[in-house]
Image 1 (cartoon, rainbow, N blue to C red):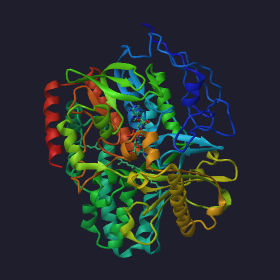
Image 2: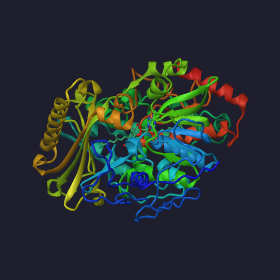
Image 3: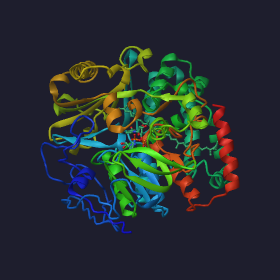
Image 4: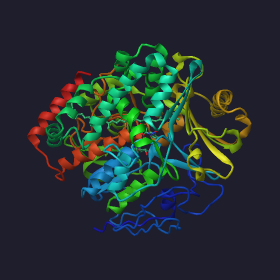
Length: 602
Ligand SMILES: NC(=O)c1ccc[n+]([C@@H]2O[C@H](COP(=O)([O-])OP(=O)(O)OC[C@H]3O[C@@H](n4cnc5c(N)ncnc54)[C@H](O)[C@@H]3O)[C@@H](O)[C@H]2O)c1
Ligand SMILES: CC(C)=CCC/C(C)=C/C=C/C(C)=C/C=C/C(C)=C/C=C/C=C(C)/C=C/C=C(C)/C=C/C=C(\C)CCC=C(C)C
């Protein structure tokens, strides 16, 4: 059977789009009213330019694409059994793409199936009127050129890609109650100096808390990161780095808020630590695992926050490109509606158009709720998933406003990322209580037309707030809520903001649900109560033989770098299971049982 694939202009426009006539986050996704050509505009592919070996596809930077539609030569479409793969990955978020590319470079034959027309999921992008908007946040950890934790850089390098990045001098500028303003400088000493100048009486506590974070970060950074569910690797790491592994094991069940309280008494400073954690976990410090907090509170100073030239969407595009380069495949508009189980084992997937694909392993980058609630409808919920749903609930979604504004409205030296909570600390975790704002054009002006800036504003919001409305009321409510949020920013940060807007699109949790295929538009899991750190978070294997999960409902949780790690772990475990990495069935059984038992203690 021939396996060659032919791409259509439409498909390729979807991969590197402008001029595409279909819907994305806020209506028409990649349609640029400035251009109707198919080209590679807007997104930087760095040095990663595809020249596919196995497919009839050649892509060159800045070139017009000429290709035809994906056709399975062995009679695809309409239902029958098709090619057999080592792994099928459902979804092409960063978690799914990292799992897919890591497996492909180990020699596996992978098929990634993406419901939407471009890769990336919440790390995707869309283009309008000359603007390139990041769908999700623009704060990128793990994108430096040093250490072991630069997982985005490493994931790209694995498939021969390197993106140009712009160092961000400030991770975030906090604007908090009682006029507390704190800039998180890239330079650790500058950040500590700024924070201690606001809380001089807590200088010692501040240094002790952040030093404990560094202890964990340094332990993490010393390890080779692979699957914690693979015993040969895990024992090897314990043997080579016993102190570091024991440090991590010690902190695994702990939360940042408890550690902060060992050293800090000032309630306002503790609220600041809550805000530090909230922006990466959507919960306060008492509910944020210490390992995750340490990872982000230190990586921002160690490797720094770095923004990819051309926008965040370039990461997923480069990975998808790299996947094809490795001889694997990715199909878009491939909506998986069911996972096929045979004798208790996951063996394939069914698409909404009736096509079926089969593989030795199935990896789901859909959330665990979607995977077990929708793709495995009718199957009993495995015990491990029951446990997961007992410990974790769905984090709220976001109301998201993408705007183009006149550049004059921003004062000189405006920072790229802001977090605003005006008057009342108790509103931190409430819907619409705090506001996230990114202005990526501060770093990369090519994302907007000349004389314009992009403002991406988002705030937590639940789907309940947006259900049961008529289309007219829904539209009216979107504009009303957006107006209120923008007015708050106008008052706090940028006088004249309202009248400087030249473009604006509002997305709600329903938008996120629809275009990111995430149950209730959730941003990921959050603990139901006080978790035992990361102890209860499942890894990649599931209660169903041959089925794995990857993404933010797996260890270590939400965040691009976090899901990239889950992709690395998943690929390692799958590779061991299909014979591409070392494996010991006896040790596997013992470790997986022990880990399952540990999770029940959470
Ligand atoms: N630093 C940041 O600030 C930032 C920015 C953006 C995203 N993120 C993080 O990314 C995380 C999510 O990444 P992820 O990899 O878990 O997933 P994701 O939600 O980004 O991507 C999942 C992909 O799977 C696809 N999909 C889902 N169900 C499908 C189905 N049935 N058939 C085919 N395709 C399907 C979706 O269309 C989507 O493209 C979030 O937790 C968020 O924290 C962070
Ligand atoms: C197994 C056992 C039991 C034991 C053993 C021990 C050991 C060895 C251990 C180990 C461990 C490990 C390795 C771990 C790891 C971990 C990791 C890597 C982690 C990571 C994490 C990360 C994260 C969490 C991240 C996140 C991020 C995010 C979310 C971001 C976001 C952002 C945003 C939203 C932004 C904001 C904005 C503005 C402000 C505007």
